[in-house]
Length: 196
Image (cartoon, rainbow, N blue to C red):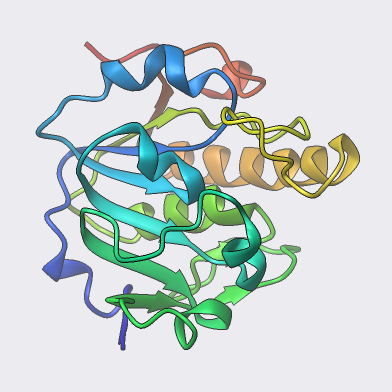
């Protein structure tokens, strides 16, 4: 399996790239993600469209969720955290992660305590091709996903991840990258004005 950071050039990343999560609001806004955009569906969000350029998962217990596919979904690239990659035969790319984040992002490390959304955010930040990152269905709080599945953690854990992701947003903006959301989120005070 290939490390996704080392092989970023193989992905059709674009100046405007999207991360689509599983928050309850995602169903109201996913249609705003252009059909031809580079978009990464996270976890169960892959069911929201017939095809995605990329699908990302990182936890080994993802296979216990009702949305776990019985076969490879219709995606161009499957990106798995290295804890899960060896168990998923259709993994195309894997990524390293750190279970917690106490420092700024490190080169070659996608995950820093901000769940799969933070992992893919840092992956996009690693590419000079990506100028603006658009979030959809990324809320980082609440115990239920859009499909009614429990996220297996309570608000306290999720809010801890919120603070880590906030740090990544501020770091990305400080380094000249635009970060936006297709809908209101708890991150609003840290995001740029919607890009048109």
